[in-house]
Figure 1 (cartoon, rainbow over the protein chains, first blue to last red):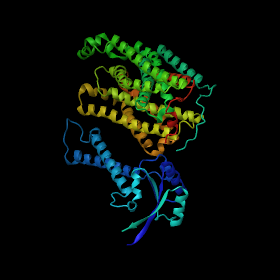
Figure 2 (cartoon, rainbow over the protein chains, first blue to last red; figure 1 turned 90 degrees about the vertical axis):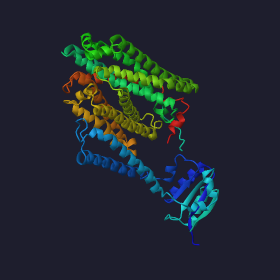
Figure 3 (cartoon, chains in turn brown, cyan; figure 1 turned 45 degrees about the vertical axis):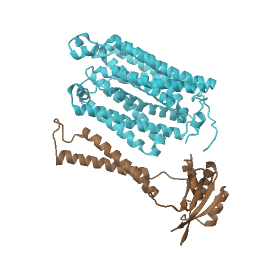
Figure 4 (cartoon, chains in turn purple, cyan; figure 1 turned 60 degrees about the horizontal axis):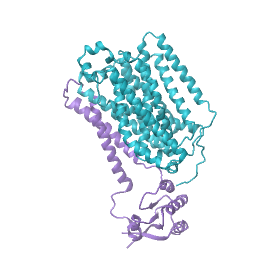
Length: 179
Length: 396
């Protein structure tokens, strides 16, 4: 069994401690770490130094795709493929095209938002190394965790452990990825 | 979570010449308008220009009232620091009753349905006469101004009282008041728009018109709040009280109601366009003829597409330059839209700008601004004893 070290998991007692610890980890220069809490903690994005999500751009591309796609489709159908005279209105009846264009733009945008979120989060996922820690399950109840992952370029086991301990960790655990 | 205490003074610096300056401009512009009435040959021009100017300030004041009641009913905490601005705008709404006098005086020039001979010759106008007649029109408008004056007075005076007494029960009173105030405000606003604007063309009707008037009013209140906030910021006032998250929130609502406006305005247009019933479609027909056609396209591009693109990006919603430009632009195009709604009744065959259009607009806007700053500079610029104030300041 090749047990690869996934990261160092540290437990904190309350959200304030988690926030301070996240700031310290951020200031130490780590990029690949994450915080886990039973509820959203205000100010955590700043404390972790997270940049704006790329999701907006994914949504924009999908929205524009829906917009142009809908206009092309309706123009093709109403003007080239099967023109029908509806109460003498022009075949290229732009105002009447708007509802369908709007709906398709919104539909593809929301697909972009949902599936883009799945993609960026790496979902769906059958298993995560953190679930190897039975203590970690309490993150859905009353405990707060930070995990610095071994993939981070700055990562060494001793330094990461020391940093988390200095930040006031209650327990420290090594998490292995056993597969 | 930063819990820095704010060191802002909530008092407007005394000795500011803003109010005096605005009153002077306003008096000059209104005097020119009145003088214009006696000089100009086409007396109706004065009334139409005045109605445009009146609708402009009325729509923004009503938007302010709507904003405040929505904040109370939803128990919004973020908006506490900016709430005094719409409160003051809303409390000055009684002035509109005075500004409305020229409209009453000019009814005969403005509204076709006030002509007896026209009504006698027109079956439709006879059928509408129980609603569209002079006494009932005046009574309705008196009722509107009483309702709005009371709502504006209540919201402002209670909030001021809270400044003095720090009585947290006032919060509950304001919330209880806002519940019934919302439908009352909504209906009176819709009927006022039917009376002032829709009845200019008494044959035309649109069930969407009340919502349409609300959508332009409510879109226009956010640029007003943003510009006043940024003006205060430029003077170094409330810089630690009205923070970036508040400005960004105003930007978000501005963006959101830009889309709302487009949705409503386009729905009204498209249904009428598609059904193509002569009695309905004529109103739009007059508004896509001559120079009005360009205004119609300018509204689509300028009031929806441009602000939509400018405000779409998250960082733009708190970019002062972009916010200022978009706000000034929307407040300009708001006047253009009202012009486009009102003026085709007067000069049917094309845009015919008059000096009075500008003087009336400048006069009423500066008057409302002067009254705003006069009241705003007295006492606290934020509801300083609001129980949610601290939470609002530390908003993320």
